Length: 232
Image 1 (cartoon, helix red, strand yellow):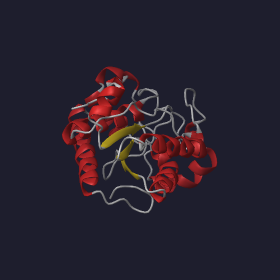
Image 2 (image 1 turned 30 degrees about the vertical axis):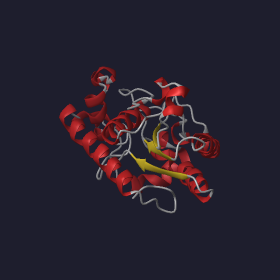
Image 3 (image 1 turned 90 degrees about the vertical axis):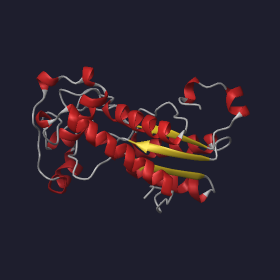
């Protein structure tokens, strides 16, 4: 079994070409004063790795830059934007499907959804067997709050600065969207947090992470891509 695609050799792949690969897709962006810039990439990679172990699919090196313009008001954020990300994913998919029959992007950042829909939709229209699935659970808060902090306490507890955890704006996302669209996250939260990380626990993170993995594995097993390429 090929676990990590990046550690395989070309000759291994030519002997036993994997029919499918998982590609974690994250971001490099602020996650409040207590979580690292690579939070989304860490989560996407961990979820993809757990799904890969279950399905015996290789996991490619993560794509760690995404469309994060809404976080541009905070230091450390590096966004390549929707159009550039869409182009990257299309070219990635065209190249990978020269030898892999099926590929799935495992997405850890909500801002990447538009690019994924464009890119995977185009790849599928070209006859390439591609799809994507989110790292999400029902009822999760929006950004750097209880949900993401709990997952990080489970998968990477050493990077969580628990002494810096502060509650952010916990208003429903639908109420924040007009201000978010005009001024980004900084317009609604001076610390860049949407939710309350102070309630996070590793035990909750273990449960949330398991839901993400189970949900992704089920979507992939069903293989019913929507019009935007998201596996349902």
